[in-house]
Length: 81
Image (cartoon, rainbow, N blue to C red; front, side, top):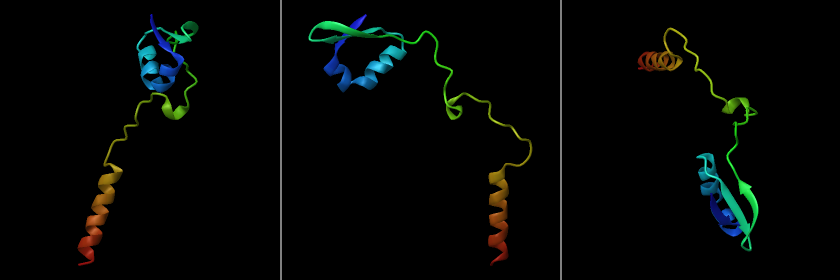
């Protein structure tokens, strides 16, 4: 288990959280005394907003919408000449 001061944890919170996400336990010290411990969650929260949850992209057979738009634009440009 690693230790870090409150001051250093504030300065480097993103790094500290990354280390905890990777499984490390970190003891936080105030004036040399332990006051808190950061530990990884045993199970990730399933309360993620829907836009952050994993999903299977839709697969629609046929021509893609972007291809249709590009084709229509090309036809418009040819007709306008």
